[in-house]
Image (tube, rainbow, N blue to C red; front, top):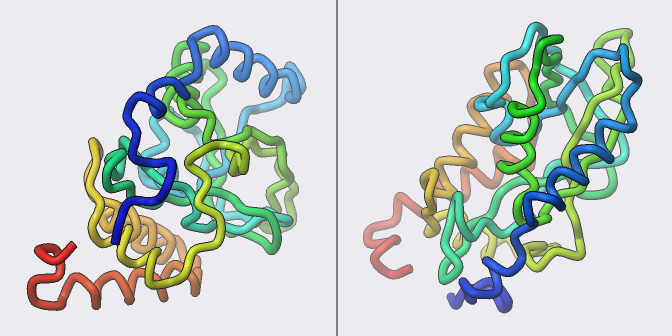
Length: 218
């Protein structure tokens, strides 16, 4: 299977990186939606669940409505390459998503938030949004990263076969796309969260990888 159209050009990929000034503006705009005395909560649904990269003082299992987690974002650096991109999670419109809400420390610095922004926003793949997270009887304003459908990395709806192949065969700077999927499944289950889509996909990828010579034929 060939790499997806628009994902194989390293020059194009580098050109899409947001400048330091653009990242700062994006961070400013996101923080402007938060009250000055309100605690800062981040909603995690993928790798931020097991690697938030920021100190936190509270963690809650919660649900957001209007979006669901979906492997519809090409990863051409962290979990793949421009020539063989992997797939990672984003929040797509519709449904709901159970994940983890992290309350950051009151001393969280601008530099720490800037590092988070560089990690998540460098290629403009996400749009930060303030959403309501329902945790028990509480409703918590959380900052979440939803998909930017206008970015070149947006994969849209893919056939299951294409999704499985991409995840099973891609590897990037931080490891394989399959490891990302399996870690997501393990973290969800360790917090009592059942995501049938993630489990079904993980089962299919494991079955693919178990076939003799699967990666050699990729």
